[in-house]
Length: 479
Ligand SMILES: CCCCCCCC/C=C\CCCCCCCC(=O)N[C@@H](CC(N)=O)C(=O)O
Ligand SMILES: [Zn+2]
Ligand SMILES: [Zn+2]
Image (spheres, rainbow, N blue to C red):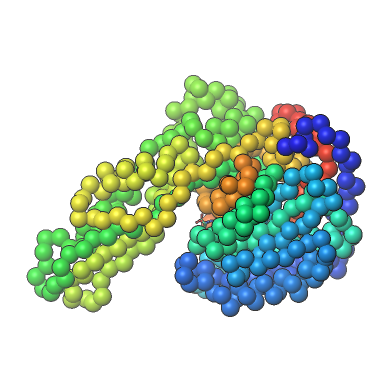
């Protein structure tokens, strides 16, 4: 990172992150409008393309300055994804990239307090699918840039804004194509910031204070289809076992047999060590001495289903299909199992374990998706992306005293850009509680107007901070 190694740069003048009442009203209305467009991804083959096209047009109407600025190039990739290239004034600075996605997972209306595509504001919250995952980020990035441009901002450091349209179902037509295009253009990035981790509040018992966790890596992924085939027949004289029974037993064995606890490897150790001083006695001593107390901590992490996901490959049965009629023995039964692979394992190792656990030759396996865990991005004092995130978190959230590296348990589009940079960071400048965590892909997803404004503010400062000289990173304990 050449600009961190002693080159003399002028500090960019900071445009204060203060917005007028009119701007604040317009920004929340813009987010509501984005939520109202049902850009749902059902499967890689089934996206709401009408809504995606409408969403692209919508962006141009709410952010007019971005799309008419001479130093910003706009390209549509894979029909519905968007790539903005914001040319900075100093070509010696390596560019970076901000990412978000426009598609959302389906949202059947049952259980929602307000219709999921209404974008209704109630009690200070904007409700709807995509308010946290991930139209908030997409709109906040563009909103911050629009506001900066309206204040005559010209960046020193070039940056890209990559907005995928199929993140929820693979990213193959969006992020992967943008990545290939940039690679063909010879682009190398200083770092990338994508969705993923948050400011976590209430996830760890005894830890009263919220802390920011920046995702240095993400778990791997396997979507595995299990299938059992037999001759169909009359249900009045069934064989001892049916396709459904065999398959149900196989997936049940998978669910009941946890993958090995891999505690002690990967970014989790860094998370706990850097968080240790936030805990009361004796947890602070225990976490500072994982060489001794590792086994104790590892068992403790298993007790809660979210922290359990940090110590092992998880197994989730997500689809099950068989049967066409009440009195016909089905010839085929299929299930899909979604694995999130621990940093210390590979796709192949998990598949080998799965075959041993199922241990039934009548069950066939078809790998639908397979991604190894992502490399661990740097978080040292020279890691520009990490330090910029840290600096901006400290400025926007002064009450958050600890910023720690961690792992993202979900998958993100950033994985498609590993060819362009070693610095992939997953962080949303938002508070996340266990309750709001359940709303992601669940029901009653919502964001407070204040939290959204803060996200815009964060990006408004982050973009400017990326232009400025970097101070040496202070030691974590001095914060
Ligand atoms: C000691 C620290 C405790 C930490 C607790 C961890 C709390 C986890 C909080 C948030 C994780 C939320 C994960 C968001 C992932 C979002 C991305 C997403 O939904 N991706 C999809 C689609 C895809 N690209 O595969 C997914 O299925 O993962
Ligand atoms: Zn997402
Ligand atoms: Zn998602």
